[in-house]
Structures are given as structure tokens and as C-alpha cells.
Image 1 (cartoon, rainbow, N blue to C red):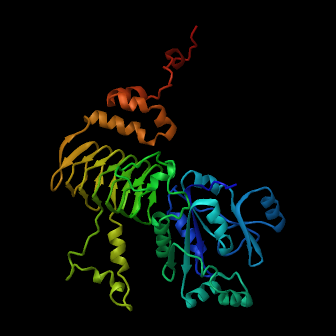
Image 2 (image 1 turned 30 degrees about the horizontal axis):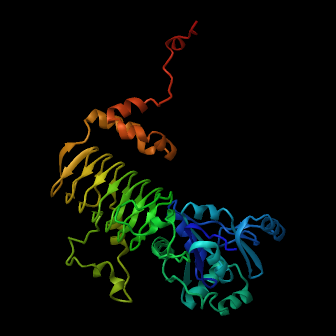
Image 3 (image 1 turned 90 degrees about the vertical axis):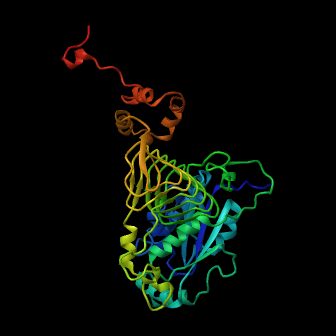
Length: 431
């Protein structure tokens, strides 16, 4: 009897020798990952101490939890027992990617348990590895020597990606998050199958793919994500590149978009080939070329100009809630696009856009407003984009059938708010 694998989410197994920085990268990735990525704490029969923020368990506590079925996967190594909580199965059923540092000994078991499975190997130079083992102070001299001479724990297992972790933790975590978002997923599912939620991970012609959009959202193949976060029910179209972007709930960008250093609100509609927050070159220097600040690309003994790069990335672009950015439009750094605004196809936006304005042209100018000022103000106060998922579903028909004024009249005071009792205001009770 064949047991059905758990999906449609992905288990991302992080492997590598002791001291390569797996736990540090996972901890840093946890700071930047959105709700579509789950990074569970491991249960370990090790006392609290430096390094990984694990859940310490005595040998007896671990055994009781194991017998009660509290772990999705468990193993023994280095005289300790390790467990990943069973709750990750629900995360994967909800379409999330679960990322965990695991032993090579359980890779086959993980591949048999989950529909989508990715293996990432972390490596470093031997000098860096030895330095990190000494710094973390977890082992004595003899144990550290044994770890240094132990071979790679997964040298022969086919991996999907490898990250060289000799640089900063931020760089390594960005690389890991990029792998989580973009690496093709292994699956042993048959070639012909009934469409399901996991089918929506395939590239589609529509910005919203076939089938239900999972709460964890979709990143289509060929896309690149570096740092940043993705909200719930978001979608990133084929071939897009997002660098340090916060994409709010329900927002999407269609194919081949390029967004950098940008905060996007909720329910934003971004068409194909849009560019937002394009990074600048130094206009006041002798040269425009990035050899001046990406210097390490050209000379091994030169460092990048961290001050210039930090200054450039600090110029964030802000896109409001319920906005629409048309095909091929561009929005420059430092620009704020107000809630409810529309940017016409091909426009180049160099100045702030007022809420509910429609702008067009090069440079973009206001051509009219979607709503009169008083209605725009009421919509912003209502902030329907902050309603929860269930409330939106409950009021879906009203969004479809009511105009803005009627919807405001219905919900500004809440649909179930009782009328005020004037006698109560005067301190009297009605007869």
C-alpha cells in the first residue's frame, strides 16, 4: 500500500558539516522570511547554550514526545536526539516551504514523506569552519577536532543547490531565501494527474494561475527573490526579480517585473514589465560605472563601497493599498504612490502620486481622480484592505454589486452596529 505524500508545500532540507553556519543562516532567514516560509525550532536533548535557539529536552522528555507522535521526523547524532515538530505537516499542507537543518540519515525518509523536497548543502572553507567551531564554544578541543575531520555528511547525495557561506550571515541568508523561493522542486508524482492546488506552481499565462491560490502564495519559475517578504495570497510572475521588497497581502506582480527597495501595500495589481525602485548610478562622480562600488567583482583585494550601497538601498519606494500599475510603467526611488492610485501603462513616475489619482505620461502627471476627494477620504478611513480573509469573503457580493458610496454607507459604522439610543445618552431608560 502506497502512502500519499504530503503537499503541496515543500520541505527544504539544509545539510552540511558542523561549523558551516547552517543554524546561523536559518536564524537570519527567519528574520526576513514571510508567512509562506516556516522555520521550526528543533527539539534537541541538549541544554540551552550558545548557538541554535532550540527547544531543550531531557532524554526522557524526548522519548515521551516521540512515542506520542509529536515529531514529523527525528534522528540521533553526536550522542544527541533531534526532532522536527509534527506541526510542519500542516504548514506543508497549507502550501508553505518548511526549512530545517537535518541529518543526511533522514533525507531518504523526507523524500518519501513530502511531495516536494529540496536539498541545500552549506559549505565553507576549512579555515572559516574551524574559526566558527572555536567561536561557538559548544565542543571541547577533542570533540572539535573530531568534527573538523569528519567528512561532509552528505557528499554523495544529489543536492539541488549549494551555498558557499564564507561571507556575511546576511549574504548567506539572502542566498538561502533565494533558493527557497526559486529552486525547482523534486516530485515523484505521476506525469498525468488531476489538477490540484500544487498545480498552481506551474507557470501560467494569467497573473493568477489555475486552481486555488494557496495562502502562502505562489512564486513562478524563473523568478529571483533576494531578502524581503511576501504576504499571504501573493503572486510573483514568471521571470520577475524582487530585491528587498515587501509585497503586501493579496498583491501580485505579473511576468518580468523588476522591483527593488520597495514596500508594496495590500491588493496591489502590478502588470508585466513594470520596474519600481530602479537603483541609481552616481551622477556626481568621475564615472557612472559600478566598478566603483561593486569593486570586489573586479579585484580580489578590493572591497565593495558599503556606504554607497547602503545609501542607495535606503531610498525606498512605497506603493499604497489597492493600486494598479500598468504594463511597462516605471516608478523611481523615493516616490510614494497613494492608496487607490492608478499608474497608466508606459508612465514614468518621478514624483509622489496622490491617493486615488490616475497618472499618465513621461514624466507622469495627474489626469483625473478615481473618486471625489470626500469619497477617497472615506475609503481610506474605512481601510477595507485590513479586513480579514473571512470578512472579505462574506462581503464579496457587495464589492461586486455596490458602488463605492453604497459600500461605504453599509460598512463605515459596521454592518451590525445598532442605532444609538438617545434616551440612554440622557441617562434615561426607555419605557
